[in-house]
Image (tube, rainbow, N blue to C red; front, top):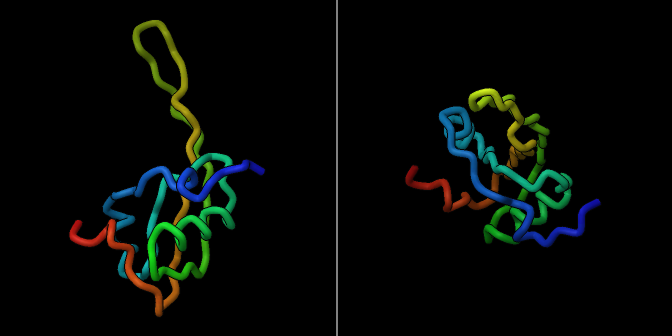
Length: 99
């Protein structure tokens, strides 16, 4: 298990049409550190965003895509995505409001 601080776990929010539609169900998508666990993601969200209470966390590992530039081929980095479900009485996450 990685020795990560809560501010190192969440890298950035994921803003797509699908993630914006799921916000009505209090589900928020984040790009997280590849070695972060579900428990670490839950603690990070509750500490970084005041008044939030996490009900569940779903994570997925995304493989890197194959890329080519001329004759050279390679892969992009692996990433990890987390979808965080908040409880009904939890506060909204302000970073997503107004988008």
